[in-house]
Image (cartoon, rainbow, N blue to C red; front, side, top):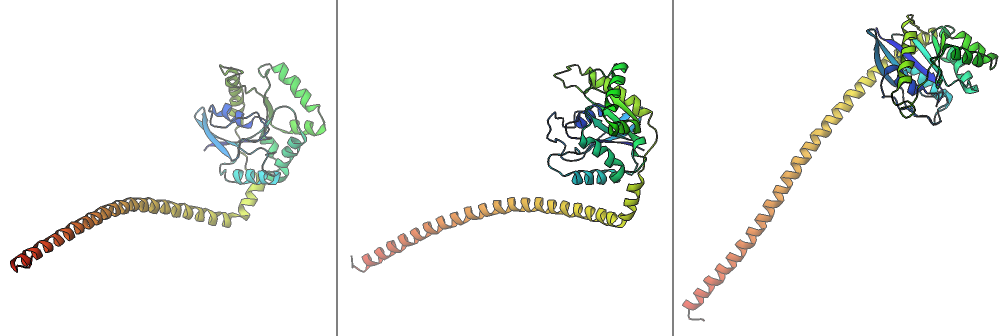
Amino acid sequence: MARNLLLIGTTGSGKSTLANVISDTINFKESEASVSETRDIQSERFYINGVRYNIIDTIGINDTYLTTHQVLQTIVNTTRTLRGGLNQILFVTDGRFTRVEITAYNLLKKVIFDEDVYEFTTIVRTRFPSFRDDLACDEDYARIINENEQVFDIVESCNKIIHVNNMTVIEDPDQNSRFDSREKLLSHLINCQRIYRPKNLTELNEKTKENMEEREILQQTLIQINERIEEIKRNVKKQQVELDKQTKESLKILEKIDSLNEIISDETEQHIESRNSDFLVKCNIM
């Protein structure tokens, strides 16, 4: 069974870049701007020692176009479809725990998941150039937890905090920082064996089971109808091409008939005139 990794964080924290680092792809759109680039849920699969992982990049908590409620609803809808549960939630931060991030982190437990969520949450500290230096990481860890009591509770409650550096190609042409960051993250994920199945979502799924099943049936029916519509459109297009062809041929024939009618009319008129002249001559009229 595949293991699912869910990325959560604010816009601009480096979620999508981290998704590329972990999956070793460039399929997630990266941006350093404060405007969200992830407009929909994105996912990618990769393997660690033969085990398949699915990494899911969610919309930024402080998305510039959606309300917090809409973002949370999207995350809930995404998480509840992961029938294999969650292997790990990666809460992404660039080291500056803002009020939005603190609120978002606490909402994981209160709104989306349950009291066990922190045991399956890894905080990933991005944009840390000294991520290879254990002492520097420890010092940054101490700085973070000393910010205030709320941040201290967050960091202390989670599974672990991992420091990485996801530099761009311009900053690091050989991409060594990404490679080493990936190795560091994968080493951690290999040790995360347990699967998290949130009780809140299980209860919610039970409550909405019938409606979800009906919705799934309707969605499949809609897919079939849309496929049929496309097939009809293709056939109509083919028929239209044939219709246009036959119409052009018909017009050509009509033009030819009109032309022949004119010729026939002229020949008839000439014949009548000729016969009429002959008749008058015979009658000595001319």
